[in-house]
Every structure is written in C-alpha cells, then in structure tokens.
Image (cartoon, rainbow, N blue to C red):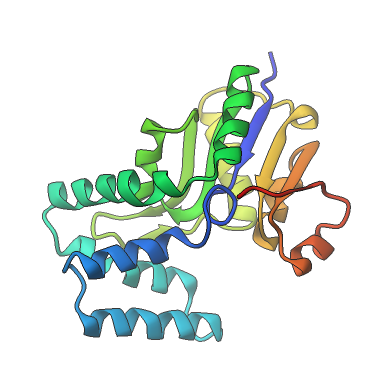
Length: 212
C-alpha cells in the first residue's frame, strides 16, 4: 500500500531563524568557542554570503568546537541545545500540523539542511518517523549537505531503503525558502510557510501559511 508523506523543513519553517547560528551562539556563551573563533565564524559566514566560501565549509567551521570535545560531551551538549534552545522555540502551529499528519496515518519526515548531529535529538520530542539532515563525519566535518534537490534524493533513498512506496499526489510538504521548492515540487499538496516576497514569487500558486 502506498503511504502519504508529510515533509517538513526546519529552519524558518518550524522555528524562527537558522538553528546552526543558535548553536554557534550557545557554544560561545558556554565557553566552548573563543571570541577569536566566533569572529572567524562570522567572517566565514560573510564570505559564504558573498559567494567566496562553500556553505559546507562554514557549517564545518561552525561545528568545529564539538570536535574538540570528548564524544560523549559533544553528544550531551547537542542534546541540551535541542532541549533548551530549539524545543522552546518551535512554532506551536508547526508541531500541531505535524501531529495532525501523524494522527491521520501519514509518514512524517523532518528534512533539513541543518546538521543531523543535533537535529537527530528532535526525534525524542516531535511526532516524526524519520529525520533526514546534513551529515558529518567523526570530526563533525560536513560530508553531505542536504539542500535543494539533494533533499529529494535523500527522501527517495530513505523510502527505498525501507521498501516504502509514496503516494506523492496526496502527500504534503512545508518549507519557507526557494531552497525548499525542489522538495515542495515532489508532492501534490505543497505549502510555503512565512515566505519572503521573493520566495512567494518564485513559488507562485503554492498556498501560503503563517506560523508564529
């Protein structure tokens, strides 16, 4: 039997802003990132926005302090970050919509370009069947950036590995930016959440939701 899916982006869809920026701020305030390291990360972010640094490099740079911790300490830090920083900031409307899909028997997936190293802990608090996110190696270096059409590939692979056939025509997806339009194009029921004017124009015809 085919399964209906409900695909959710995370940053600026289920929570305000960029979660990895929140992680960098927490690393700094908890003493795991020096002022010099913070300035280096901010400079790298500027270079990325100017197109002079690959986004994978700035994500790796942002996660670098975790690589200097013992493995267990890094895991505990990420779990507390999710519990204390991300969960309180979740849009109630987003969580309710996830739960509606889950209650309806849909397969709910969180699909994000943010790192799996911390997003994985959201599985303990959100009604999701799986989390697909940017992957890192043992040193927290990005090895697979799940963005744009890579989201589509990873969703397809996730389903194939589990022998699941999707009912795409009756599936839903939620995203906020132009980067999510590839994923939204997979389903019969796409939704833009709090989109910018530019994204709304590029996704013309896609229903718009406002979650706060």
